[in-house]
Amino acid sequence: MTVTESPIRSIAAEALEARLGEPSLVVVDTRPLAAYNGWRLGAARGGHIPGAIAIPAEWLPRLDGPELDSLLATHRLDASRTIVVYGDDEASTEAVAGRLQDAGLTVERLEGGWTTWTAESARPTESLPRFERLVHPEWLLEVVSGGRPEAAPAGDSLLFHVNFG
Image 1 (cartoon, rainbow, N blue to C red):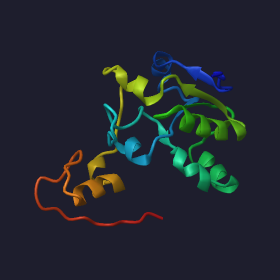
Image 2: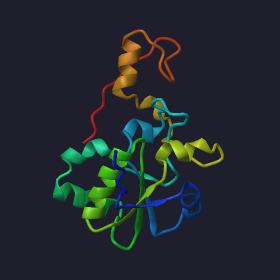
Image 3: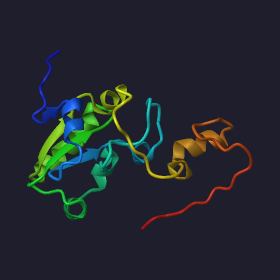
């Protein structure tokens, strides 16, 4: 089996942590939106690296050129900034990193991704306020099936379906 090296540079968690807050740095989370919001989804910790923006890899098939351009503009992602991407798995991280690199951005990937970041309990993470009220489909399926997912309701509860956009 041949191991090929990624053409995208990597950055160690310690180096990224030291650079958090730099105006020229943008951190991009490629994991599912529920994980970014704060759900653990099987990981030791939920949430995201402080200041990170979400560009889930699952969005890539639906992001055409104009939509990607709009997303980049909204988050002020341009050639003057360094973009560091991370995720749960190398393939998803590399897919988003490659797409951003193809758009002319300087991209690095976090070595070891979210698992490495959260392995050190002192490393900061943040979650959306009250993220547990933004339930995801897998959570709902578990509740409906009689299971007890993370942050399961203690008693009776109401579910509201809300569409954004």
